[in-house]
Length: 330
Image (cartoon, rainbow, N blue to C red; front, top):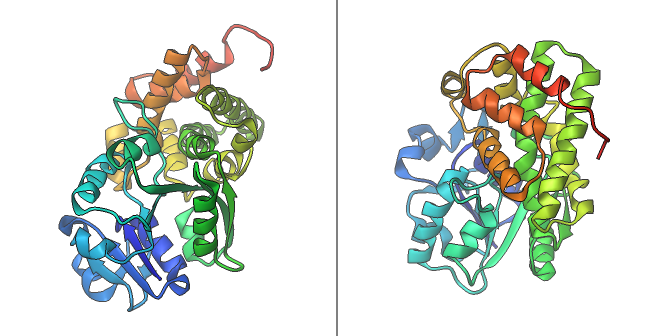
């Protein structure tokens, strides 16, 4: 079997390394500008993580060659790149037996579409699934185990991907037919992870962080369920599981963004310093716009949106959250 990974970023290379023994052939595709000489020649990167790929892994910028004969194709690019890459896949053409699996977590702006909606809009007739869960790349590279969920509208496709990508003792996968819930859980939790990093660095205590995660989880559930997700999915691996990991780990880019906002840094400087994508930044805007459209109250997410896109101070953020009108818990 052949696996193709579209996206030579940290997560794409991590998943290629993790699945090395599951496939006879592995190919990593990226734009020529994204493939460093070290990666091309030595199958290795050093930043932001040190990752050494097996010698059998092919690195290429030729998309047609990359997906040829691949049973499973993993889409692991930034959300802003999903539509352009799918347009390229449309030109090249996917075969009827190939399965495209999206691992990117976010919402497209300004359309407010989920990644599956974007992908299936461009490639309507493909076999499609999503994979989401608590998957911090650094821990996976260190050989630490985790669990995740594969979802598809066709449960048989989800089960096929589940079986192909499961790694004994390291990467336990569950299957689901709730594509909307799995997808939104992985996307929306990034916003709440920013809030958690903010609270941690502000020194506001574990009580407040626990409160933010709980109220943030309620916001995620309200929005996702309104969009068709099953409630139980939001409290599973791709929702609460991913939220707990991302909102408590310094390895999380979104947690780090929140931490840096608490120090008074501006978002452009933060992203430049990170040198990588933190999907929660754009998702905060998308989530707040979705909530407004659905007439759903999302105060934690609104606070993060203001922290990212306005000049509000860290103290003002907390004052606004803590001094809102009293209400019943929902």
